[in-house]
Structure formats: C-alpha cells, structure tokens
Length: 219
Image (tube, rainbow, N blue to C red):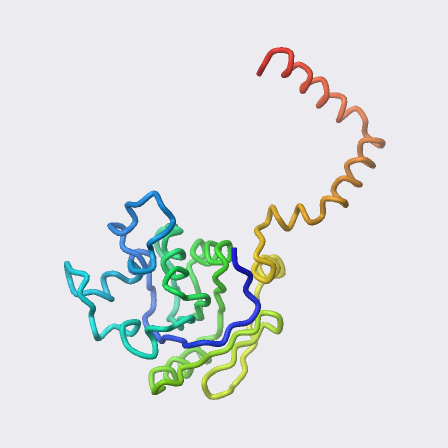
C-alpha cells in the first residue's frame, strides 16, 4: 500500500453520525470480484439521484471545492455496520486518504489502516468547530495531516494532536502490513530460533520427524 506520511489537501465536511458501510458503499455496488472501480460507487445513494447515475448537486462531494477532497471529516461512529472492506476501497479510489471523526466502527478502522487510509480520532469538541469551519469555507477548505508528529492543522491554523497505536502508525508510514514488518526482523527471529534450537533440541527433533514422515507418506 502507499505510505502515508504527510497530507495537505481539501477536506469535505460530512456532519452525520453513524455513517455505516452500506451508506459508504451500498451492497448492490459490491457485486464485482475486482478490487477496482469502486471510486464512482462511493456514497452512491447520496451522490446520485434515486435509481440513476445522475449527479445530486446537493451532496457535498459533488460541490467544489469538496469534489477534490482528499480528507473527509465525519460524525460519531463513522464506518459502523458490516465488515465490508469495499467501503475503504471506495473512499481510497475516490481520492480520500484520511477520515477524521470522533469515533469509528472497529472493523472499518482496522480495514483503513491495512489499506493505507489514515483514520484520525479527535474529540467532538474539536470536530464540531472544524466541521463548521469547513462548511463556511469558500474555496479554502484545507486541512493538513502530519503522521510523523501526529497533528492535524485546521483551516484556521489551529493544531490538534491525535493518538494512534505504534504498530498502526508504523504500517502507515512504511506502507507495509504486519507480515512485512515482522519480516524486517528476520535476523532477530533466526537468531532466536538458533538459540532456542540449542537450548531445546527435543522440540525441533519432533518437528523434523513429522516433516520426514510427511515427505515419506506424501501428506
């Protein structure tokens, strides 16, 4: 996945609580086996007029400057509902690289991390004025994210710190998943295994016997 280090771009306000994954991408839009083509399906029930692909001019992502949004600022419990990973794909393929909200659905948040999309949790006391500022902006709805410093800078220049787990932060900064990060410590892993093989040889003898039996029986 693409590393996330720093982002400065247009942020779209979506002041709605409990935006679930079916709102982010309706189930009817997930009938493809491909992981591509989801950007145009993002918020399909809101971006388009009922039963059509005709643009709903009232929806925030269909209006400038928010049609160019790279960040989305939402309400409480963003991404609740089902576990569909396509909700994150749709956001990413539209161009959203960061979602800021007071809280997230747990599975959705984890899917974000593993797809290179940064979920930032800020207190509602910070989110509400940020949403108001974005809604009042005329062409300058710019928010800046620094993952190294764990800061959000709003349109008014105010800087807010956020917290993120060390492993989540490392995955996003490096663009690597848990397995890739673990393999970066291959030398330490092999050193431990060699030491452990010396101290507890019987463990590895059983493993070797099982492997030899498996080769002989073809299982």
